[in-house]
Length: 130
Image (cartoon, rainbow, N blue to C red; front, side):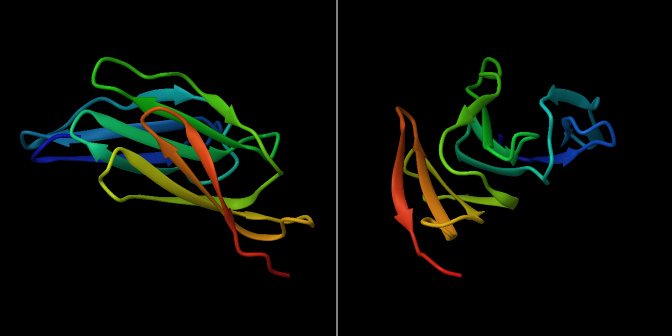
């Protein structure tokens, strides 16, 4: 989340979200973010001290946790329809994370997109599909 570092996020065997950071030529300790993770986490950063991570939880909802430079926000459930698979996320760099996931049930079947900004989440809709 800063210059010269690499962070790897992953779903651990106990279904928690974990990460490890490589900085200054060495790997740091593995850190446990908890949660009950059913998918691979999707992670992006739109600011040097901001990281957003998303995953599908045990209730098939999308869950979010963010780092603000001082600490983690804690997991929060993002409302809406159940999701399948793993979410995908990217940032446009303007204090927003754009994440997408598959919604398996009508009327919103298909790829759904949400924008999670510095202040709130909005629904951008999504393409309907089969």
